[in-house]
Length: 303
Image (cartoon, rainbow, N blue to C red):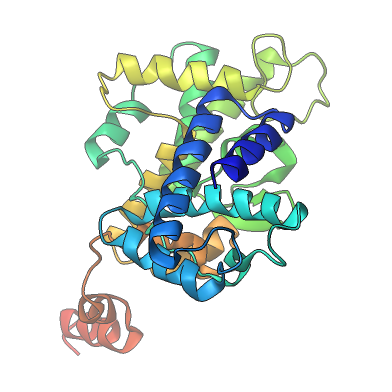
């Protein structure tokens, strides 16, 4: 078995794996081979099958986290791919073995107070401050990805309707808050026009050189304002997007509606928000059902 392990390591080295990866693959494979010999008393890999690999997986789960077991099995999958290629086994049995499910980590979030402090950090007495405030407001207002924000043109705005168009693989219309509309209108009127090279330029958020802002430029901008706002936690556009989602869900938004806002094809991508405390469905029903709202309005009008 030691010879098989050595040949496997030589095969990995030919694939240009890093030293740390080589060590991990060596240790994982060696651990498995020791277990395999002790369990089967075999001198070769002839007794390796998917039932045996499922048994090994289940034993690993007794003392390892699912994420660690997945990493361990990934090492063995490489080893058994190598074994199949060298005809030590007929077929890699791990193709038939289900890996443990890894629950999604809760996303990093800003509190509502931190978001408010961040949005108020840019100064409105300079065109850069007006631009930065508009970008941050729009990002939090509509839950955009940073590349969606940076690719916006003025023709994508439908502020009179309270919407903007997000272009990409799944083009969609997303709502904009009243505050974001107000800030955008101020920026368009007092800030953006001074930074254009040509009157017909469509880029909504040009940088100092009147060109479309880059992701790096946005990263520096949000870091600057987070520091000014006294925010100690990690922050980037993704975290602000997660915060947008969490705060909406806390106020009663449904995961299906969130998926539509984000342009997701399925609900699977919203599972990372499943832990967020949301209003009881009865509360949402009482607040949203037109029949109940109508009764309240009629009572207030003395009907």
